[in-house]
Amino acid sequence: MLRCITDNCIIKTAAPYFSNLVRFTVKHILELDSCVRTDIDHQSNQKLSNLVAGHLDHLHY
Image (cartoon, rainbow, N blue to C red; front, top):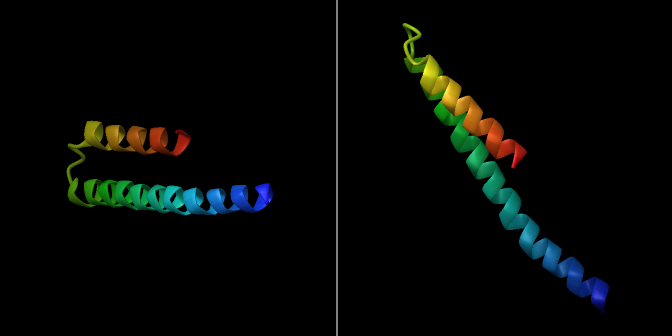
């Protein structure tokens, strides 16, 4: 009985967690892609650095 309850709780909480993780990862990747594609003259180095740092922080969190 206890195993059934804990397994059910894990399933209910794991799906939203990983769904949000994927959503935020996709959002960060699209922001990085947009920054790289629009920065023809390499003027956005600081912005790109901040985006990469934010993405790495999110992955480590």
